Image 1: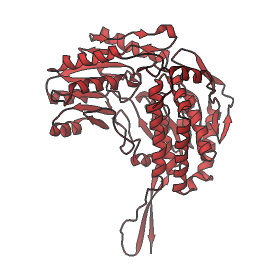
Image 2: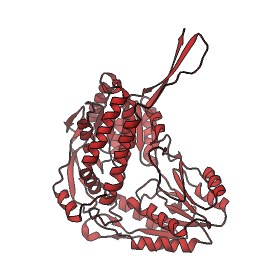
Image 3: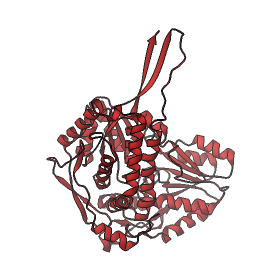
Image 4: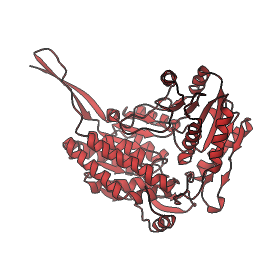
Length: 496
């Protein structure tokens, strides 16, 4: 846990000197694409002017990854040696933990305690876990006829383009690039234009850990230019993306219009959190519901943004959630006591407030919040917001808001609850609170979601896969299953 004080973090922020150049083929590269401003949502101040990748820079990064894959040492290293380098990278991330956490907090508004204790813990564990896994994978030799030998081998898929969002800029980058590198692929990472600084530092630490030049390239830029060029590039073999469903559709089109590269998508969510009257602890259920929607400013694809409560306990649970929302400490992300920081930017705040105003117009009841706060800071802050009396067919109950806005809906029986839970186009995650083991199993199977949490939320570790169903995407991050995205299965039949 972080022991630094508010004054410590403020002092470190004044002395932060982030990397601002692309990392291409092991070297800093500004290119000719100009620069763009990275603005901190905590106070509206410019953190840095960062190199902006156009088509030429994308070409250079992909060419470096292609050379590193086709001719370089990384895919040809013994898996155990690749693993040792990934573990060294995990150690370096630990050594630079405070700098990385500060960078994340400044560029996207996450509370420094969460950045240091949660985000950095996650990315460090990710690289260490895949480093330890790298030499544990085995090929197959199926039993065949006596005069033949069959081999089934997994080979690295090639050059991976990884495009990740700003809400967990290091964790989600780690979820893509750690298994890709462990498999022997080379990578071009494009972070969000809102949060490139932490990714650019990650790339330099990977070089320091011993990753050869070109094995990991990091380029900064926006989606319509940089992301599009990466998605269309014919030398990218696999594209791994986390972000909105709308942008995910673009990457599928890019693949169709180029080389039919494999595209793996982890997309949006409108996750239901069902509370039954027999929940083992209603107070805990309410506290977890509040934590789940307000953690990370609600900027999470898995956020339990729909609280589905049995009508007999609805007011009790809603009151408890509202009380926690009102007590939540919203403040400067660099203050270790802050519980909810700044939204990522003004445009995003405007979108979230648009949903809030539309919900009021649609007849939902605003129980608390719903307004901008701390305007004197120059930052981008929103009050924790709770609505009830929400129309299940309305926008508030169906569209992803990606902010600290909770919709409370009620139901009278279990079938209605499941139907409500499954009614959106998304299928990323869900929660269920019950004391009945049979109900837990039956409802978990009935929910169309890639992850179902029972009597908890956002729990798990790297041994379990993560990903969605329906329009929440395909494929899985985390666990050994993630390696399936970055490998090709080859059959070799030898006639004896």
